[in-house]
Image (cartoon, rainbow, N blue to C red; front, side, top):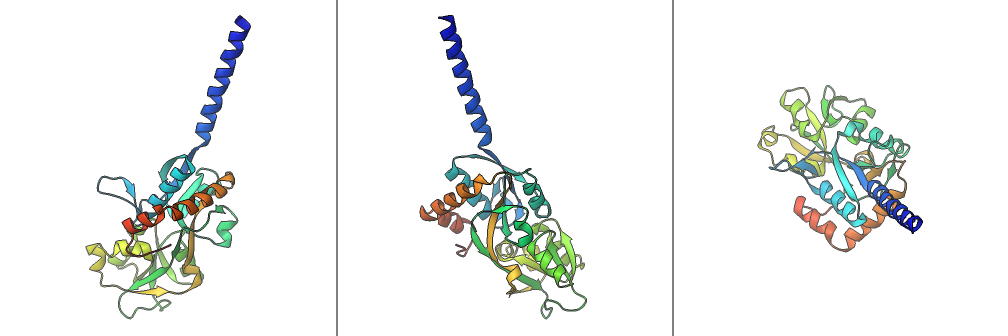
Length: 247
């Protein structure tokens, strides 16, 4: 009898331990930004919100996993995801050969373009122009590849600061972020005009990245994205945060 009780106790303990391990495995560390108006920012109560935040939360719900959102900056997110510090980079990333060598990309979740902001008459590539960009971004790499002088900032919210201080005469900004910035009075007071930059390096499909230590997440995330597109969740999030369709 005692032997049976010991066996039952061992079985219960093993079941509980297995459940604990499974729960821990399903708690994903997701890197996000909090300074990209319209896409990923903090509301009046300090809560994370925005189009990208809404999409990553919807994907986590579809995958039935617990996701812990951890705020980071764009210049470090690829390396930290590649190293396994984050399971997922819940950040709008353009897929490049350099990035593909380090992380796994899920299916794209929207299409991005970039805008050039400058005072009237200031054209891309003009001599003596310094360009405000977010360090580590596609816009940063593009400007430097052209030999342009740049002023790098850590977040999208800071892109206007070099312009206001006279340190930069232009900025390259993703369109979804630009729409949020144009709502701010201090940005409008700069008197900038915008134009679409058609270079392929500055536009294209944007996706979330996955740590190479968690390759199984790609299939799960791709399937979850298809489900939220079909069931209307994606469109509801799009309408809530952006004045145009990005799907």
